[in-house]
Length: 291
Ligand code: SF4
Image (cartoon, rainbow, N blue to C red):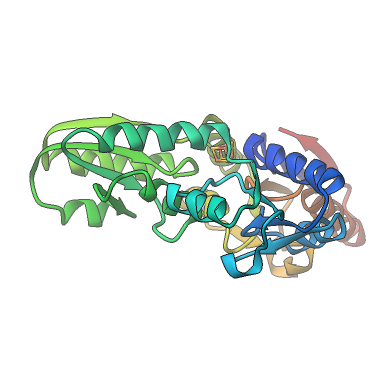
């Protein structure tokens, strides 16, 4: 069986950078070290960070003055920064610089008139952080239908979560353009996300089945699944090689793999090995290529 791994699969720049900063901090910081929420949604990585002395904090009550707190790549709202500073903890800010720029855009827009529309998942930490910069002027829209239900406005600005699906963003922008006299569009989908989405779509057109690998609660991995599924019905979402069932591979000679921004490279490699092994067992010759 031929196995093709999509370009840009696995950790994005922001997640890699946050993990490096966290590991470095774990080694040199004295006292207790926490990340504010899970740095990535992957139990193995979280366990490895715990070995390095980094625990996950989900509430201010866990923190004591002098502790070190790492802000993950999604960033946080100004209110969270203030609350952490009040706790007198040492902050290590691993917010992705691209997310920082989006926060600055929201902050700038919030000082002017007009509504701000953020296209994204309202429960995602990046969006929660962005809302904190909007001075109450932003509205989160998750899909085209929600955009179509909005009233006509004189002035609006629209931007996206950094990992948003490009097609969904265009649909929302189209719907808003019909309901807004002056619409300013900021395409804030990051380059790493765009490349990954395009590579996944290209791969879906070339293969007979495609496995999207990543955490089920990872928003960007879910988007990759939707993009591939639109083009290829035999698209499957797996968190690890253990989730692969014989049905997913049945009759397939060419399979694609794509991983989200928070999918560790080891999980992708293990998935390649598992498919390869299963294919060998079925006495086929496998060939692994990287797109
Ligand atoms: S997806 Fe893009 S913006 Fe978001 S953390 Fe990764 S590199 Fe940064």
